[in-house]
Every structure is written in structure tokens, then in C-alpha cells.
Length: 432
Ligand SMILES: [Mn+2]
Image (cartoon, rainbow, N blue to C red; front, top):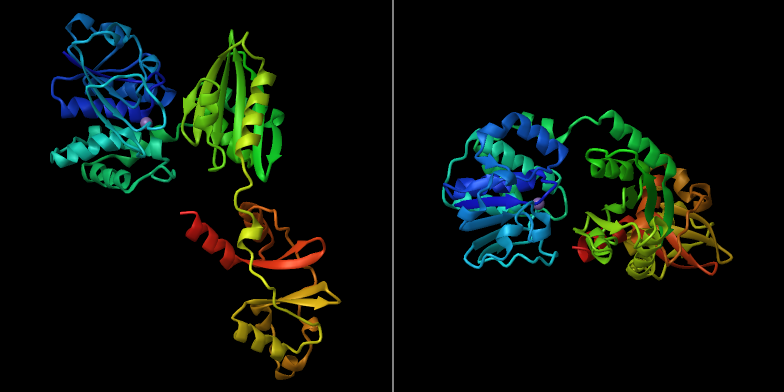
């Protein structure tokens, strides 16, 4: 007997990958853990009979000769598979995209790759074998692919994931069904958890990265709490959010991050858990640490690991071209053309008096205005930035104030200038 199984708290990628293996290997039986995510549970309650799936309690382990594990590489994440762990005769296959997690499943054969979803690896194989999928199979696989890649938008998404989505849509994947299960409405207890979370979150600024901490005491389990945490992070506008929960004799820490500076998986690994860059969790025995100690551990890890990285000093331009307040507008235009710049700093006695940008020249309607001094047209309210700011902080200023020309000031002196172009070339040139 060949069984296919996956991790507890089964998500759609795990379910879809299990089903995909049953299609690739006729006769293989999918074994889905009892503990599945809420939306997977809802999907299975209406679709279960359409697939060849059983539960761990129904497996006759004495007959199992082959085991395929999908979407995890750890025995501890499987449900009731201990009996197979020390079976030397067992052939084990592994399909997984969790490359950063060091697993303990010693596979006979494996396909492991850094990719948006595990199901993509299987879809590449199904497509290569020119297999036609039913609309139902295509839909469940699209659910897995979209959930793990944030509908192809997470940075972990690859071109293969997008090609796999095209293959599924070609085979009749139903987007109405997919949207229904990917956007379940928030239930009352989830809404209440969100409100409590928002009121009690402590927000810290670590070198320009905002981090929220929340210590929650929950009376009962909240379904899909991780998606409530994700929503809370977005509503509160923090770059990362950590929620510490106390259930019985254990603490559970759930983290979500939207920035590269904070790798949740690494932090959780430090606490004995796991995850990937954007999401992860850990579970800690009550006696081992208090929730305050866990918070302090995360904080000191963050302080050590969030480095300033690139600062404004690295991308500003200098020397800064400046003019006096008496310069004529005609001359301003000439200098902009000669120097190929879109803005000029107006200085008086080594102090910033104003700024004039190309856009301001469009306000000149009459010919005689070109003879007037720049002080009549410049903006006097000049926003300056400091050299140790991060590109993200400056991007925020540009978006909020709608300005594209920022003098960099250090010790009261102008030492450089940052424009939208500088930031764009930083994001698209250096960061890729
Ligand atoms: Mn996955």
C-alpha cells in the first residue's frame, strides 16, 4: 500500500499536493490529518467524497510499503505516522518547498525546491506527463497555489508558479470557488480577537522598522488566528507583528512580517519553532519562560539582526548645485538644462532659503516673469533629511509630502541631495 500524507494544521497547499500525488501515482491513498486549517475543513466538508482521502486512524500500517510526504520534511509535523518512522523496508518520497527548514525525514527519493508552493512542483510533473486534470482537481490545486503565493504576489513566487496557475486555469480551475474559500468572512470571535489585539499592541521602532508585540490571554481557541494577526499587522501599519498567546501550559508565539529585514522563520527557529521569511510560529513550555522573557528574547534577536544596511549617505548625490536667491528664473532654467537636474537648492549665507524644481517653471506664464529672481517662485518650506535615514524612511516622506527633491543635512550643513531617481535606481538596481 502506498500512502501520501502531509503536515498537521493542513493548509490548501498541503491538501492540494496530497491530491496531486494520488493523481501521479494511481493506487496511492491520501491521508489527511484530523487537524486541518478552518478553510480546508470547510472545503473538505463539502468536497471530501470527490477525492481518494482517508484519515490517519483508518490506515492499516502493517500494509504500508511506500510513504510519500508533501509540504513538510519533519516527522513531528505528521499525524500518527510514528509506526513508520523506524521501518527500514519503507520507501519514502518527499515533495517540499521548505528548503530553509532542516528536516529529519530520510527520504529514498525527493524533490525539494525553493518555490512558491509545493503543489507547483507536482504540477510541473503532471504537465510534463501531459495529464488532463478535472476542473475539481484543478480548483483545489489553484487554492493551494494561490494560498501559498498570496495569489502569485509573495516574493517567494517564481515564474514556474505562474505557469502552473495558467495550466490549472486551462484545465478549468474555478475562480468563484477559489475566491470563496480564500476569503472566508471573519467570524465574531475573530473580530473580537482583532479588536483586543489592536488595543493592546505595543509598537517599537527599531532602526526605522516598526515592530508590534502583543501578549494575549485567550479564553478559547480562535479559528485561523494567524490570518487575524496578519490583518492586524496591516491595519496597524507595522512592518512585523508578534503575538504571544497562553494556552494551558504552553506559550504560542505567532509572527508575521512584511519586510526583508525581519525573517520570522529565523526568529522562530531560535525559539524552537519554524517558518519562512514572512510567517512562522513557535511553542514554548510555560515553566521554561514567561511571556515577557519570550518578548525580550525576540527583541534582542531583532536588535542584533536588523542592521542599518544601506543608508541615505550611500545613495545621495553630491556636490549639491545651489544658487542664490537673486538668480533670475531664466538663469535657473539654463542651469537645470546644463547640469541635467530637475531641482536647485537656493542658499543664502550658507543656509537653505528655498528650493526650485522643474515643475515650478511651468507656473511662469508671462515673458517678463523669466527676468524675476528665483526667490519669487521658490518654495520656502524645505523638507530636509539626515544621512543615517533608511531608504524606506525617505520613501515614506516622498509619498506623504509628494516631494521629489530632498537636501541631506548633517551638522547644519547641506552635504548631499536625494531625488526620486536616486531611490528608484536603488530599489531596482541594487536590491534585485
Ligand atoms: Mn506549502
